[in-house]
Length: 162
Image: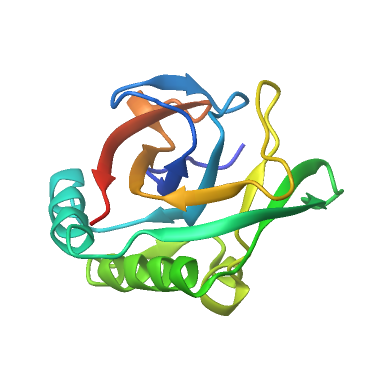
């Protein structure tokens, strides 16, 4: 098994989830990823401060749920595509720019910028349906390696947009 290191991801949660909530990597709340898994040189506090300062003046984003699609090497992950709206692309790019100041290192840079494909993975307990109007109003920083456990996730901080 490869070595695990501290990583994060930034998502819009579509469920009411408290900061500090810990869950297994196999049981995510319904969400859409705005910045996929990354490492950063900043401390958590620095990252929270920089994102909070930038997002308090940022416009929220809107999108609409579209068709189902299968992702993953073997097409094993069922998702609902979200429209690549101007407001959602701007939010994605602006958050990337902020994080780059902290030495952002994306795990999969091909899925950022022009490769950004907004979607919500269908969960065992919840899914989006075609035509659902989705609002991106707060971004959550997810710890992908809480307490050095690669099989758990933790909501570190949720930051309101606007």
